[in-house]
Length: 242
Image (cartoon, rainbow, N blue to C red; front, side):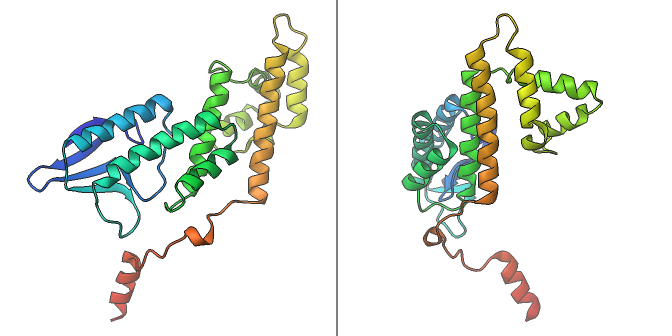
């Protein structure tokens, strides 16, 4: 067992069997499925690429990925392919501003990988990091204002539910609450009006995007879908009938 470092999580391990030249890549090597980059920033992806280089240095003949298409061969080429995917994702995120544009670019570069839903999630996390970096890592200034008013009305739990994923932003960060919080902040000395309005605009735009995706969800093109063959469950069911 080798503690390899960054994979799709910060501390990842692999299993190396030198006598047969095999590596079980866990959450580090992906095989013909879209890669879960949601927990990484650009630095994390660079570290992930370095982890893959460590695996390549072992010169394995067999590489078993923790995330793979059913029936895909355990080919060591998946190491380099995983590195290229990570480079592509970082480059696309740096050049695109919206979730939709990131997804479109990644699906164009990697049209044959399974599980495109992962790309939407990872693109959303990447855009959220960009917004946070633009705001110096601080939460939008209106959030404490809204939390304070909800606390005064005995409704703070609804604000907490938002961060526990028990509620949706549109039910807590309503237009009247955003407007009221903005109106209280604008007259204050030292208020960066342009930054404040930009934060509020970003919150509204993100809520509009979520609602649009809920009404018009995106699915992988039918042509990109592949028959994975019989599953273990189907084989078990077939056996029970014999």
